[in-house]
Picture: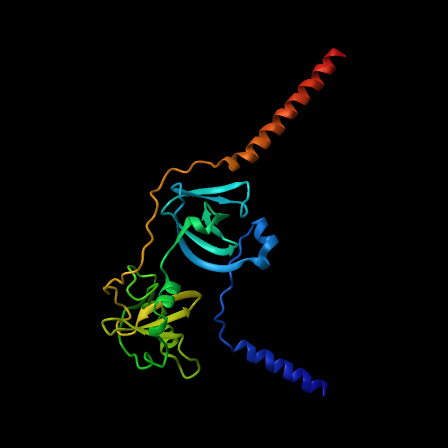
Length: 267
């Protein structure tokens, strides 16, 4: 009986290894004290925004409503928001090999139209994938993915000279695995597009099933937020508090040292 139990455990482990892993590891900041303390209350966002502060810039803080300024950006700067918390967004970027992460009010950001925006707007016209690309046998040089059908620029390209049959197999599906294409959309010109959320890591992109390496598609008109004109950032009053405290501490220390040495001389 014990041997049979061990055999079943080993078999289950072996079968688990054959299941393709398509789940992304969610990013987390390396060092953000507030996030570490409130991780369970933060919502994963993973979307792009543009700085659009009323004053012409936005300020990143150490925490929502915090007191230490992490960075400031003029309006129009693209910011990636990883997590949200009660009207605030956590953004991060690499500068000289170091991660800079801070919190900015979502009200001071303009959301960039992306694949989620497209799915929300055209939900009634998006259908489940039903093998529309299964018969592909073309000789395209690459497969170009866009944030949405008719986006102004290519989001990611897979060169078939490098990836070859592996990419095509993922998209058409094989005898062992179904296609990575999850849903399809037919545009105004009758072209069919396929959405892939995961392939070789995070993707969330659309490609044209009728013209995989195409780039010259009509641009889709999407709603654009009017940005407030950019202005040079000015440190907010609250941002001076840490410096004032440090200055006050330094002044008190200097005064105590002066008093101490004055007494010492007097003696």
